[in-house]
Length: 346
Image (cartoon, rainbow, N blue to C red; front, side):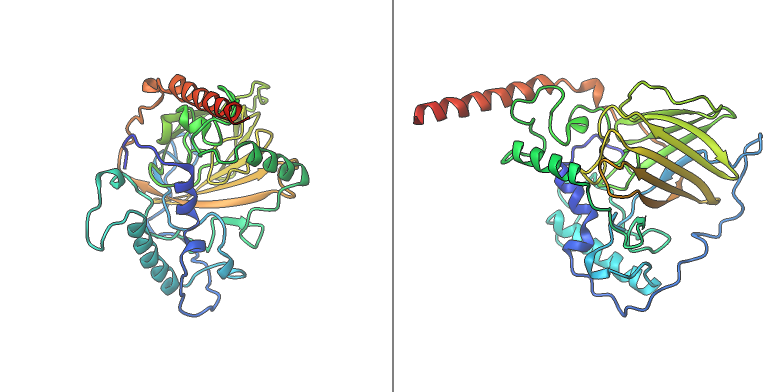
């Protein structure tokens, strides 16, 4: 779905934690063998200059969670029957989230959700493939201390409300989304979310362009071997290269921690993304994040993307985003009222 909509960070977290919140009774616990191919739709095409043709619109929605649920610990891949069973549970869960009776369309405020209804084509139990347990590694002591301090500063504060005393540099953990700078599923890295799970790729011999539907953000990635810029950017500074038939995009120098389905990100991370066309209808997207100041070790996710014949339309957000002054003015007024109340009680 391509509509201008707004989803809280908590909603996004719920979507990707579906297995952790809904008991899934899977038939048997026999370890399945991963499918050798995602689809059998023919040989992937190539560009006139001989590189794999990655161009087009790709859909990365899925009900597979980012992290493996605790009840599936040690189980890497679902059988076909287990995958079908989980998809049924996911649909019931989605309707319950929307308070929609079975078979009903749902109310206006929910119609744009497009979380998907299928597990990833690999049938893995998590999008994270490394570490082998399918979980994000532990935070470092430094990151744990920082997270605790941020939680204390925001005690009793809603997701989309600025941190008390914060101005433009601190609109809260969803600040980039509130300000229409970056979308919650565009990252980078890209991860499935509540809606607008689409990306379009463009290629020339010298550049690749990654256009995310969410917030309509485009990364222009040079392939000519130039070094990284030292300028910090919202989506980081990306450089690309080919390794065989795999496009490698290396990104550093983020201006701030990018949005994703976890709030444990850092502007200091080193991101390596891999794009490989498995067949005519499947693009395998893989990403590795590394930041020794945030996590105790690197971790890797993998998201199979399906080719789509749909077009991507502009997600108009920043052009009409005149609410920042109101958001901040309201937050300051609330703080002043609370301070006045405290003084009156002394």
